[in-house]
Image 1: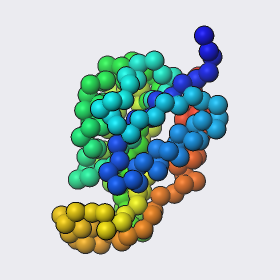
Image 2 (image 1 turned 120 degrees about the vertical axis):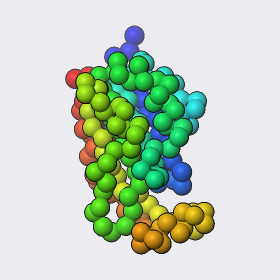
Image 3 (image 1 turned 60 degrees about the vertical axis):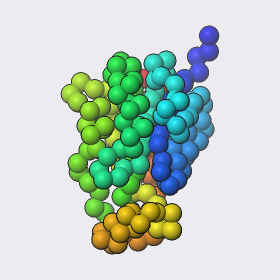
Image 4 (image 1 turned 90 degrees about the vertical axis):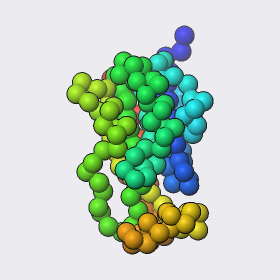
Amino acid sequence: MSNKKRALVVYKSKYGSTDGIAKTITKTLRGTGVTVMVSSDPDTAPSPKNFDVVVLGSAVYSSQWRQAMHAYCLAHYDDLVDNANVWLFSTGPVGKYDQLSTEYPDTVEMLMREGSPVRDHAVFKGALDSKKLNVFERAVTKIVRAEDGDYRNWENIKAWAQRIAGSVGE
């Protein structure tokens, strides 16, 4: 039986911004000696049951996590609650303004109820490439004056992943 600590990272991206964040978290955890199983498809991701730490993340649209991530959290709710080391991240705010929402997406709120095992919920700015968006999404970005660009702060993401690595085995 191996003493190596095991992490599960499950996330859902839409245009790749969340994917880059999840890969950075995974690489950082692996760099500390943690064995990481990663899935960008919540529909086929394993149960969080036998992992020392679970990291769940999603792109946020209209203040909600992607439906597949929400469904994963509902399907595995009991196993997540039984795990004492769950970390959440949301990706979505873009632009140069620091107007990060203080409201939690429903999925995050559900997992962060009193007595929950969630250690932290991080909100990371995302990236915006309007050429990838559909007509409706382009209209919304114009209304909120979001500008194309990569607003992800890689040092903050790595530091957050280091905190997760430090929690493994606590």
